[in-house]
Image 1 (cartoon, one colour):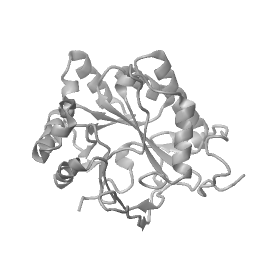
Image 2 (spheres, helix red, strand yellow; image 1 turned 90 degrees about the vertical axis):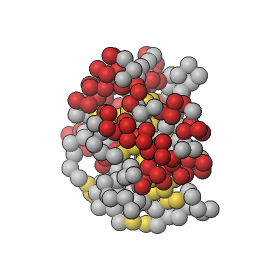
Image 3 (cartoon, rainbow, N blue to C red; image 1 turned 45 degrees about the vertical axis):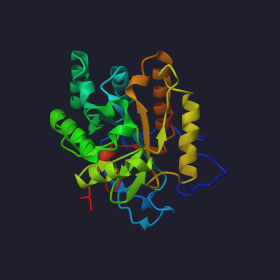
Image 4 (tube, rainbow, N blue to C red; image 1 turned 135 degrees about the vertical axis):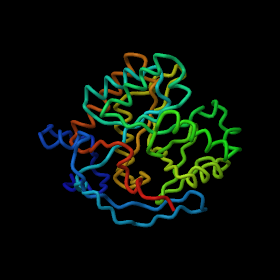
Length: 288
């Protein structure tokens, strides 16, 4: 068994050896932790035939035996938003909600949920567009100017001051250190968002739904996927994993319980630090 967590040994796994939770681990699992040493980053561009990987010095003081997980939830406020809040409060863990403008104004209940998200210190709000592309993604991304305008409408109407965004229906990244476009026809629109000052963040791991829109699979399977990503260095930024799921998948007792156990076991492993997406490495740099 390896003793050094920073070495990505395939002879053991992070999640298979849970340590007892100590006072120190509680500090690491909260959102009010000290700044720590960053790990190395990688310059990644999927626009080129071969992805470029360039080491960058990282100075965020993360101990070598820790990894950072960013819990993010899309499409809120929606069915399941209240259940999400209950889980986060129960576990005292922070997260980022990528909200949709038309969902906020969809009903009085959604407006109330949005205000709860805004006021909760565990939650950070980010931009997931105003219309969510009307769920017609191909046509939406054909008009880059309209895409930027849609995000501007969400930013202004919801008073989202930090221009951190996630594109609907696409896993797109536009940061100084990462350029990723999953579907190439969206490239011009993604570049337009970056030019407009948006810091576009995708994800490393998604917990997908069943056909009935509940969480698919169980927390053990998701823990293994987290383990595999870190072991094989598949994160966009080494030692930093952006996790995605959606508010509306948290409407049944099984899904609520599975997400709760997923977070609980990550905490009990004493291997991870939870942070909001605004703390992702280099995200607050002015875009080139």
